[in-house]
Length: 210
Image (cartoon, rainbow, N blue to C red; front, side, top):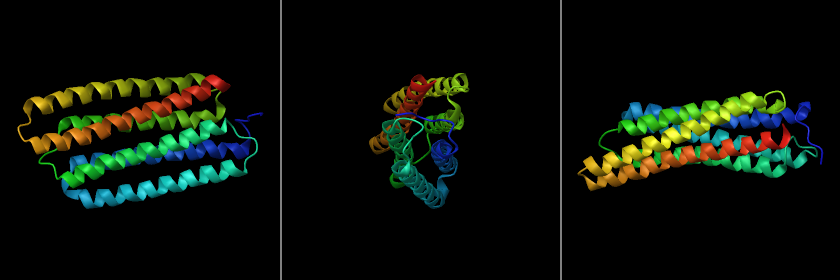
């Protein structure tokens, strides 16, 4: 099959992917607001639920467009994998927030704030990559720069996660608090793993078509 990155009607795929990545970034920002002001849990939860609904609507638009498009800008399998990956990132962010609210933690750990800041930066790099993907030939270098940024941030998140987990087990005397934060931090770390997975998918598209 012939693939067309430049066909105007196919640009919508990339616009929708970018919108989905932007929604993920907004979700991470809402999580950051909760970490800064735990007393606003109900408001932040409502905001994230709304963003998750918007993300689902974007996914539906991508699938609908895929079903009526004969010549797609990339393999259908790649499009579906990106839809699934982007959706799972937002779901994971929601999972972290749900636990943070449900567990009623005693205090916010600085490591959780740092991990969320890293996640926001990763979302910005993914948005940048998607904004350039419609012209994979002309933007190959810039796209790969964004992908490498995500990889660097994921490695940084791994380091912060390991450090924070070590501190919890060394310093936290309250077993309940230890279990709560272990769960929340694992969700945060997994979210960054999913960012890396999306970066891998974008890199694969560049290698195929650049």
